[in-house]
Length: 394
Image (cartoon, rainbow, N blue to C red; front, side):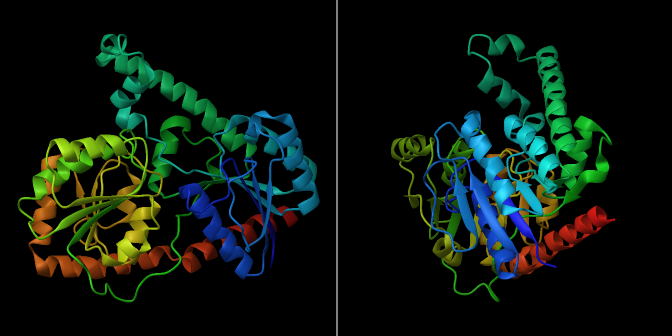
């Protein structure tokens, strides 16, 4: 059965600009090719790419979700398009979720909200979160057992309210991996658990074999020092470079921490490291032998799937629960205690000096990536649509 599917997101529709946009594009392409009618609504006025996989609607006015005219236009689009399913890619945006909840009661579509990051981003990185939120003179006063307990209690209370609002307004809440449900229950227990479902991110395709690789360690991602922990990239490589004299480290991406990395390279005379800035990463995945990711937390990192689809085993910190489900530690990935730079460097050196293990890991990475091909993930979505439609008809 074919359906009308409307995606709603706040950033511009550009799959090269972020993980949410990339995921939206891949799903939209899949649904369109399977005969479904697809549309997108973005709250940005411009910055979009041309898209042949469905019809794009965007806000006519500046101000995003805070502009009532944009919200009214969203309702117009929902009414005119006649969606069977609306996929809210931004369920944490309170005004958007509130309005979509009201609109669905008028136009009888099913509303699906999608988690796009770890629910434990603060829980597992509480001190860093406090440091970011509190003024510098006040932070030391709260950076103790009692202060952290108070901060965690406040976070849990506020996050519980947000999650209950999301669950109440949506017909389904899509988690990225089964371990996310343990995080969800930490905040809301079994509240509306019948609405919770797990569907991973996807990749378009997987190479049949690793191909010809170069002696490259690769990192791809936005450069910042809170979520992505880009501050650990150069300390990692500085511990590797003298033991891996014929290897190089390539960092693909841009962001607020770029200048800091450039200063570290210059002041410490770091060799054989290349900063490319923002680039399409496919050719780098194809050439690289391993992929290194130091993130403090992620929802479901597209870059890990993309790297593995080109036969790149992954080195990452075991800093969020979903990672153990996405990869297989010791086979296609090697997970390190957060955020032990020395251990990350030792594991990298050991792996790259063990040719047999490295080759096995490359093949294992391809095999693991097969789980997440868009054809497999898309079928899970379509099965969910069928079940939800059957329930509505009954």
